Amino acid sequence: MAEPKVSVCMPCYNRQDYIGESIESVLTQSFSDFELVIIDNCSTDNTVEIVRQYAEKDKRIKLYVNERNIGICSSMNRCILNSCGEYIKFLFSDDLLAPKCIETFVDVMDKNPGVSLVTSFTRAVGQNNTVRDEKFFPQTGLFESRKAQKSLFFDGNWPGSPSNTMLRRRDLHIGLFNHMWKYWLGDLDMWMRLLGAGDAYIVPEILNFPRIHDNSESAIHGVDFRLITERITLADTAFRFPHVYGEYTGKEKRNIQNHLLERLVREGYGKKGLRAKISMLKIGLFNNRRNRFVFLLLLLKNLGRLFRKSRWSD
Image 1 (cartoon, rainbow, N blue to C red):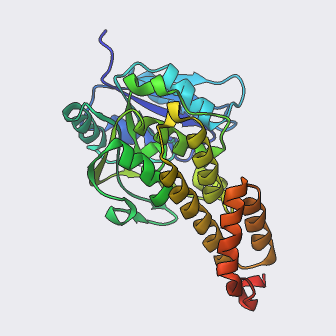
Image 2: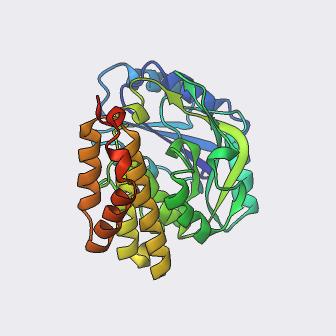
């Protein structure tokens, strides 16, 4: 039997309320040459039974159950290692795909052999219906490798959740998801390395629907200063390992570090309460000598804002 063109990789854990709808959004795709690889991370509800019912009806579905809870990054890696498609499309077990999502992403990959990462606009479902459109992306269409890679520091994680992305198996020489990073940095680190291998492509259509609820990954891992802290950590890692992340000039490094530290100060000023100010200080001062100096200058530059009574009260 010929290998499928696309592997849809779906890690799951206790998603009995949503996984059926997620699977249906894959099975009803306009593009049918795919396999759906599902890795269950020791669910304690009826998730596995629901998946088995679908797998009995459709042989494209492959279910693997972890012997122990290994975390999301390792589960995603196990999905990849148990798949065989030329292209890899991720989908979390509570998210949804538009009917032409895979077809559109495959068309982009086929027509642009230099593209390593494809993403698109999204619309959240569940507790809100936030749309991530052109306002959330530095540009649309083809995005040159080095420019796209650097923009992750200035424009944030615009590729978004793995559910929003597709990549090429051949580009996995850059490695898999690094389970040593915390949740958000695992995504950003992977996109950084992929964009060192090739270009990005941003499809200006809503093709992915992330679900927002109290137990979603984004809700569970939403911690104050998490994103900015991890972006500072990633920058330091990228600069120390140019053979993995690419070369940065001294000026580029300074610009990126200054930008991230300014974001840290701005976020710290914008949060109410003494605890937020202490957290900001710890993050900014736990840095190399040059960055500590820049951080202190930024604090002094905006010192008056630190003493606004409304900002200190909980």
